[in-house]
Structures are given as structure tokens and as C-alpha cells.
Amino acid sequence: MLNFSAYLACAITLYIIGLYCLVTKRNLIRLVIGIEILVNAAHINFIALSAYWTPGFIDPLARSIVVISIGLAGCVGAILLSFAVYAYRHYGTLDVSKMRELRG
Amino acid sequence: MFTAIIDSLLIFSVLTPIVGLLTPKEKTSTICGSLSLVGFVISIGFLLRIIPEIHESPIKIPVDAGLVRTSLMIDLPGSFISLLALGLGAFAVIYSTKFMERDSGTHLYYSLIMAMTVGMVGVSYSEDLFTLFVFWELMCITSYVLVGFRKDEKESVEAAIKYMLMSGVGSATILFGMSLIYGLTGTLNLPRIALSLEAASGGLWLYISLGMLITGFGIKAAIVPLHVWVPDAYTASPSPISAIIAGASTELAVFVICKLLFFIFPAIKIGWMEFFSAFAVLNMILGNIVGLLQNDVKRMLAYSSVAHIGYIFIGIAAGTKLGLTATLLHIFNHGIMKALAFLCMGAIIYRIGRRNLEDIAGVGRRMPITSTAFIISVLALIGMPPLNGFISKLLIFMSCLDSGMLWLGILLIIFSAISTGYYVRILKALIAAPKDEKLNDVKEAPISILIPICCLAFLVILLGIWPDPILKFAEESSSWLMEVGKYV
Image (cartoon, rainbow over all chains, first blue to last red; front, side, top):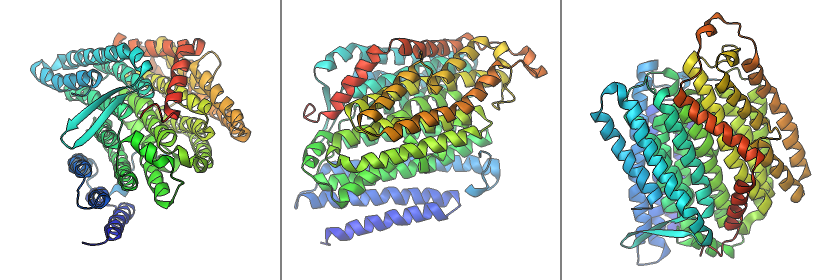
């Protein structure tokens, strides 16, 4: 079994990748993927910690929060994608830097 | 399933769209609106009935599922905030029966409002981070849809996307912070976390997890570098939704931050006083200065919200019991007066269809009741003495003096004076003589829009003249929050 810090490093790396994706990308679909990466970083951390906290026993609390959170992340993704469809109908593009009705 | 307060709302939330499908289209808004109002009234009735009970001891409702145990705890601070959320939800529902009449899909709209309120009530009652996260997401997801409810308008789709991207990052950050807390303590139950962190003396990971939680909730609470979604989402959403989000959901995020700071992390209190006073100053500067430059009244009110979050943070930065009382009281009062301002602006939009200052100039002669209520709310936002905004601002100032941060109190007064600049522009536009020919055939708003406006205006005046009951409630709630031992 790998050391716990390897899992933690993986989770933090994923979190930073997700933030990088959200900051640099302009396409709405890529931004949705960025948010999913961010949520999954937290999931990996939870799963790794649930096994680490008591050796030989896997805490079901962390597992259940991850299962429910996967469903919730799915909801957020679905709503974001459906709004992406409407944005494409209104603006003719998925580039978020072109959406500038509201400013000031 | 959970508690009668949440259950009754959930049942009506499922029932409303089914009934809405069976009714003829032109009556959907009225029938579904009255049905959801029944749900809200039942829920508020249950809440009022158990408030005397929870003065003695909080009611715990365990949600059992085999090895996993999570729970809700109905306590005083929670019922203080949920009373605000439920009240504003009920007013928004009455208001929407006429306001949303012209839209399609209103049966889903009412269902979403109720689900959002369930989320807010659940967050304020949750006793562990698992329950808190699930209800938080319920509130977030429904509010995304409600902000972008008018999907045929360009700006509301754009605002919903901006809001969702920001808030999605916030939720992920909250989850990451929770996982770190879980790693440090091995539990997600709030009192147990508080007990196991009591002896802790800081440490890098504790600070990182606290920082992540505050960042995540701070996105919803409009802390300044994270506030960019606020003006857009408040402007583009339908007015009753702006009223709920500005009045209850933003305040709820501040409440969760209070709960985390005073309840879970009291041991590392020393670090965050300077931190929060810095954010309070930033919020006041940005909210008040940018607010002066706006021409759109709803945007102006949104920036005034940002500034008021700054005032609330002063109470948190004071870190004393008086500071927490002032914070809770200002959360409640600001919720009521900001909701009133948004509802009045919505009534004007309902009749005129525009929201710029020059377009609404002179509307006071045509819509006297709405404009009087609007003037009352704006005066309360300034902090005029007989109204409720004055009481809580005074308490915040006193808490500054109490904890020896006079400079913060002086900044509060200076920025309140600066903010008067844009509030007076709204007052002037309301009072001015009508110039535009188009305003001649504008009538007073319909009765179902006027009822919530008049009730909220009455509350603003009543809580200003007679603040004792709500002040006592806030004081008791803050002493509950500050004593960890009572919960375990």
C-alpha cells in the first residue's frame, strides 16, 4: 500500500489542476470539466483518509459522503451543461469572455 | 423523516408541481402559489411551536442508516436564522403569484423556492458537516436554476453561468476543507470536532482547512475578492429570488462562518481578528465606492449588500459576545430591509419594465405605497434612528469600542456616510416630479405584491422602535454559540 502522503499529494495536485483549468480556459465545457476535477480532488482525499484513520477498518461515513457528493456533482454538471446550451443559443458561442451583457 | 419543519416543506415541494400540471395554465401561478404558501405557513407554525421548547435544551434528530449516523439539531441560533429564511420565503411566494404570472413553468418555480428554503433551514440546523454539505448543495443547486429561471433572457443565462462557476468552485473547496478536518479529527460531527480541536494549538493543516472552509462559504457570503457574481446574479434574477438570495442565503453563509469560527475553532481565535477586520474594510470600501458609480438600482442594492457584509464582519472581528450578538442582529435586520428594497424595486420593474435611475424618476407620484416602503427600506439601510438598521449598526459600533478597535468603528461611520451618497440618489429619483410622458398611465402595484411589501415595511419600523424581543433572541443565540459544553 502506498504511503498516505502520496494520496494527499495527488489530491492537492488535482485541486491545483482544476483551479488552473478554471483560470486559463475560456470554453464553457472545459470549465465544467474543471469544476468536476476540483470536486474529485476532494473525493480522493476523503477516500484516502477513510482508510488511513483506523488501520484495517474503512470508515463508511467518508464513503457515503463521497457517494452522495458524486450525485450532487452530477446535478451541478447537468445544470451547467443545460445552461451552456441556452448560452450557445443566445450568443452563438461557448466562449465565456464573449458573454458581456452585464458589467459595471 | 427529518423534522416537521423540513418535512412539511418537502411534501409541499413535491406536491406543488403535480397539482400545477393538473390545473389550467392561466390559473397555475395562483393555485401553486397558494399551495406553497400553505406549506410555508405550516412550517413556520411548527417552528414557532417548538421555540419555547428549545430554550431548555436543543432537540436532536438522528438520521440513522446503519453504521453512518448524521443528525440535525434544532437549537436557538439555527431557529433564529431559519425564521428569517422561512419568513422571506413565504413573502416571496405571496409576491410571486402576481409577479411570475406571465412566465411559463411557474409550478416548478414554487417547488424550487420551497426546496431552496428546505436547504437553508437544513443548513442552519445541521449538527455535522455531512448534513450541512448535503443541505448546502440543495440550496445552491436550486438557486442556480432560480437565478437563470427566465432562460429566454440573455442576461439571466449569463448571470446564472457566472454564479454557478463561482459557486461550484466554492462547493468543491468546502468539500476539500471538510476532508482535511475529517483527516485531522476523524469525525464530521461539529461538537466532537470542537472537543477534539479544543486542545489543538493551530498547526499548518488546521489553518489550511479553516482557510478552505472560509473561502468556500465566503464565495456565497460575498467576501470582496470573491464577490464578482453578486451584482450580476442579483440584477438578472427575478426580484423575489434576488430578495431571498440577498436576504437569506448570503446571510446564511455568514452565519455558517460564525458557527465555524466561534464554535469549532475557538482555540485559534487570535489569528482571525485582524484577518476579518481587513476583509470588513475591503468590503466596505468596494461596496460603497463602486455603488456610487452605478446607474442600475438593483446593481446599486447589490453593492450595498457587499458593503453591509463588511459591517457584519466587523462584529465577527470584534470576537466578543457583544460582537456576535451584533452580527446576528444585523444578519436578521439586513435580511429584512434588503429583501424589502428588492421587492419594492421588483414592483416598480413590474409596472415600468426598466431599472435605471433616470427611468424610474418620478415614480413616487404614481406608486405611492411602494415608494413609501422603498424610502423606509433605504432609510433603514442608511441607518436612520427609528428604523431597525440603526439598532444593529449601533451595536456593531459598540462592540468595536468594547474590544478596543476604535479605528474600525470610525471607518464604519465614515463609510456609512459615504454610502448615503447613492442611497440619496434613489430617494431623489423616487421623490422627483415625473418628467417622462410614459409614466402617466402607471398604476399602483397589485394587492398580492403590496401585501409582502407592507408587512416587511411594518417589520422594519417595528424592530426599530421595539427591538427587545429580537435582541434577546440574538443575545441568547450568541451565548449558545459561544459555549461548546452545552452542545455535547
